[in-house]
Image (cartoon, rainbow, N blue to C red; front, top):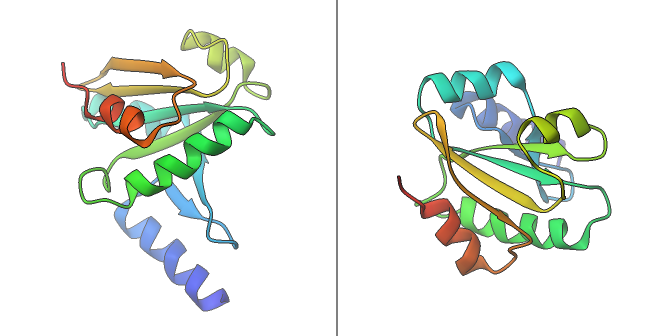
Length: 132
């Protein structure tokens, strides 16, 4: 098991993914990293900010659905960062987020779409497909 986790971690580093799996195989998102997000914005990379709160059942359902979507070829390269709205209140406020379970999509250096509380796979996929 340790070998598999080490390989997964190495693969994540190689592809620069912000997504990694924990020991139980559950998808977790990299915590918000200001320089990495700034780099994604400057390079006009499409990315997603996931605003969560520990113990939030809606957030948990979103993560499960995002895990499914990020495993598909369509969304595999999407960069994802997680922001804890309790521990990072100022950061959430800077993005205008007041509630957990908020998903915000960015592309070409600007916000494209935002939804709070969406848990259906189709709804999240539609959000991720939003174009300018």
